[in-house]
Image 1 (cartoon, rainbow, N blue to C red):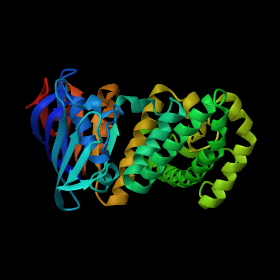
Image 2: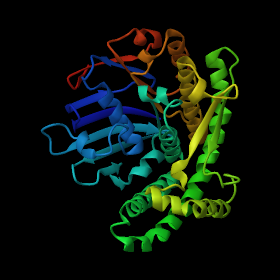
Image 3: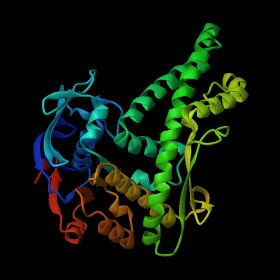
Length: 366
């Protein structure tokens, strides 16, 4: 999978610019705030239909522009495709592939991308929401049905949260609470099965990468954790649903008292350990970075096994955060597919990779 050419019109700080990428490694360099990450963001949109930096399309449209557009020619599974994403504040984004209207989730059937940015180095130490986002972004690309389930779950979660916060002023809102809860738990049962399966695959792929990376015989393990009453996250959705309902019964009054949703897939987490010890509590900075990198590289391998092609790898200013040993390991692992690496100035990375060098300045690329 690769993006051959991309044209940006009114996107972020790009008034109008066209960029051709190499099918291998592309090093995108320049000073800060020139548009390097914006370029990566546009490629990520081609795969997921959304930004990794903002939830609103309004922020994607350049200052002084009423709309923005991303045009690209991409290649996957031996075929070339033209992708057109139009952005207009206040309106749903319009997506065309070869002139045919598509929705956001359908883009992942064409292109996949794995993003690694500085925030991901905190994957181990941060709260559970960061690790759930890792699962959600990865699974949505290889299982479009998951993205639909997650979207509906989030909608019900927002409604239920509003009821729990406002029912004291409007007691009649409680009449709808059970309906939203039941919908959440039915969807949770399906999301849990997807997440448990993906976490198991991460636990297969990441430890081998981690052993090679650490060079010290450290053993990485990844375990999926959901609400305590779920006996088997690989069981049928019906069985998991009943287990979740059991959890709800014992937490129903606590939800009413606290105004928070205490039962459902939004409580899930990944338990990451090194040599059997919880990494979040006890790992050093070097260990957490090695573990995070191993997990992201494992994500790339899973996508390869699912699609038969490497996803596009996006490394956003992450190498500057790594010591030389970790830089070398990452650079030695990224062959075989298209990679876009951003860095401040050149930092010698293009020389190490032999990749195409693209210099960005004030939204222009040369």
